[in-house]
Length: 261
Image (cartoon, rainbow, N blue to C red; front, side, top):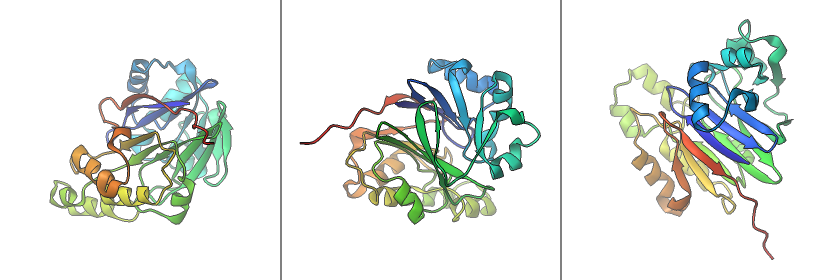
């Protein structure tokens, strides 16, 4: 199993997860044309996609989903709330695969466990994707950390974790007060400290890759996010990568776990 990003941030998100049986696109916050162009840079064409998984209905995650799916006949996996909010009436219903945020499903040889999360959307969820005991966690667009989230993301071999904003930069930044309250609120986005605190609660001995995702270009800086995640020796710097808005990140492979004797 390997994964890559075609872009991560408030202007558009998309994550590729690939097994020997096919490729998943998790979210498509770009136009269909832009998404296809970005995927091509990763060596992926539309025919490779076994499915599109959607976390929630905000435009930076769902903008191109219906157009891309309809055009290329790709199944779309989404909760009822996400479908009702933005996909109803625009997505060919023959392509819709309704999922429960509490029930695991299988696609392209991968086991996908949705994780319900606190965010200001209708029925949002994030995902833990597993193959042959290897676990990839995808977590963004979360306003606060719940016990269920901590339980769900234990023992990940790879984790893409939102570090959306630095509280001081957000407070002093250009956003209007209402938007600042939304971003920093319990249904908004994780700040650097919240992400570090959650990471400290996870069993990380198997972790090969930690990717900083959904970082705000106006209210955060990669150095601040890195500093928070490195504090108190939460994780080694060597495993941390940054997902950027313009180019995401290139393929990272989740290697089989080393057996201990």
